[in-house]
Length: 431
Image (cartoon, rainbow, N blue to C red):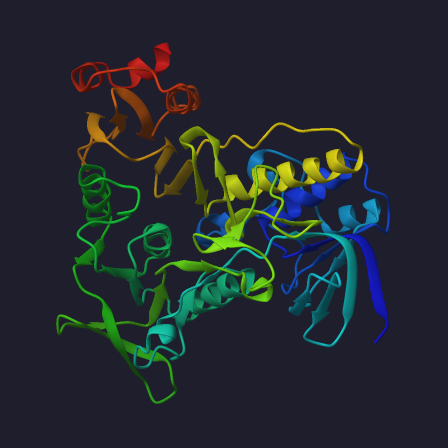
């Protein structure tokens, strides 16, 4: 096959790829210089929508492509064509030779580049990876790509008013439980930890969401895991066996037990750290002309003087933009500011909406109304370390209040636990 050559190549077609493409266009990339190579069949899109509005009973989300998630222009395939950016879709790269600057696809196509942007993202951990019996049965779903969401939508239509088991109590578990209840599906949510979202939530935050979900009809089963699946003669899942001996009927199973960054293509060719590809504050890797962004990048977290890998859409967007700015600055002999990221996580489910900024370390103080049965349910939490606020969480905040907690987490003002317990959100609003 003929070899294709580009000045810039982005490998991956998710959020980071789309935001990188927009920044390339802003920086004045010329027609024919940039290619995006993606194994998915669609142009880059806002992946978080898959667990939210894409699955709502009233139909699919409009404005699905990047960059609508951050209030930007919607980049349809026509946008890429107008800019002279090659969208090479349904094309999986199976070999990357960074020394010769060559990528090879599953179909044997060869692509040469001068500068490479790795935006391969993450892949879901599957129960079959852990040897769980029957984990390849029909109607067991994972949610990472648009095809996964489409298959789940079809199953929801086929199993109207059916029963679902959600395996996992993290982002996917909480958001999918809510969406399935909105679709009038009976839901059991199973996870081994003592409370939901344990990497971020404290026990007191989690108690609100667990209570709220119970009030919405979600049955939560903690402290156990799925160890096997029984099937109907047609191969569809019939029930879920739990480690504690219980058996749960299920027409649909959705699994959200974590993800791992897709770095295999580059193993042994780039320096790695903390499970990702090690980069500097401009997302340059240890290999010249190779950058890595989003889930796969382990980068310097300037605020906390350490290095981290962050799996979140906000970082995917911002790291992609930073890398492209750095690529053009390098070519022009200019400089850009170092990446100075404030960790940010959020979620929306039912009529709830929370945001978190900063670091969840140190002592904590809860404020507001965290009664799951409350009509207002506005509450939050601060994290204090060495007498300073380092993290802030808020449920049902106004846009102004959410900006205030972000500022507090960035500025890190001194405060006492008693002061924060008494003042609550008003403390952040004064900063």
